Length: 280
Picture (spheres, rainbow, N blue to C red):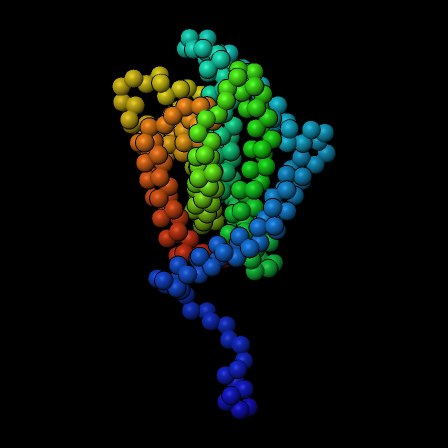
């Protein structure tokens, strides 16, 4: 066979990527994943339909359970801590709905790639597409629970302020969700003990983070709340929706936590992205 014909044949390069080549491949995977966003949206919607197949109310059962929890905890803690119900109930409803999204995203993250093992083995797809699928699935549940917030805000005449910040905040939530889902998905694919560890940590952070209690209850040492990675990211969305002004330190803390999370996730993703299919 002529040498020219041999050189024109396609070749499969199995050499591992390092340094800038691995980083370029990681960014290429992210771009390819967003190019398949319609597919991720369809799969996320299909996950919701299959999860509640045969149910009359479907995901609205989560809305009902959230409404019951808001009502029960709101009346109880408002009485225990002698708080104004008209101020505490909107805070609690918004906090629980936002925490439900964060908790579901983080608790499901270690199983993102293991649950998609069949699809990953069947065809070659960007890893980012599976992450987007999980985020879209939990976002759809979040949209159902927004009904609870709307009802409570209407009853107590709470009107959001500083709505101009919602666009960058929601974008920050999206990228943080992608970073934490990718990082924990990689860890969960490699170490199968990751899901129970993450679930235990989320239970601890639920009580440590101002979700069912207001930050104003802490008089001394309130600045240490900024070390909690969940408090700043929740507060930059919760504050404007409750019509409150935020201290600049909360924004700085949220951006700092996000930068650290993105940096770790990007390095780990670039280093081990090609091994996911062999781990699951």
